[in-house]
Length: 173
Image (cartoon, rainbow, N blue to C red):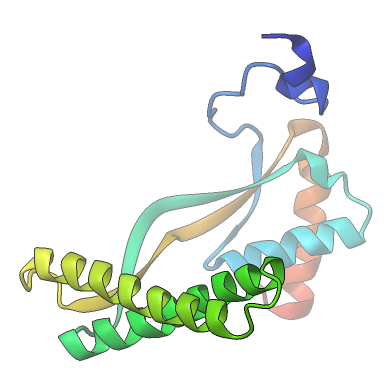
């Protein structure tokens, strides 16, 4: 393979991807929510603090799955029909743009085919689960606390800035 098609030909990124590493730096603030940690880093940025030396670290990560609703055959097929209709309509519009004199037939064929295929695949998938997962949920990775770290040469100044923010706004640090 030539170098013309490697990642380095298109960017300044290293040829070998970096492996995950533990964060470095000294803690300069600790917060109950990610939003508070973001607000703290934004405050540092506003004070011309070198935020390239800052890291937000989630401590004690948890995977939280929030249940959104119950699944049923009707709901599965209705949602499949709606998403299949949009995809079929899109494909039908593309076909009609490149077919001269076809009229609305490619759009109608795309719409019907999209609904049919989507419903068949959704029914097969839901039927294969055999009622073991009759709910819809959304997963989210959260942490019990968020620490803001800074490299040692700027840590003391960062602590002072965040202490001033906490004194003004009541944001715990």
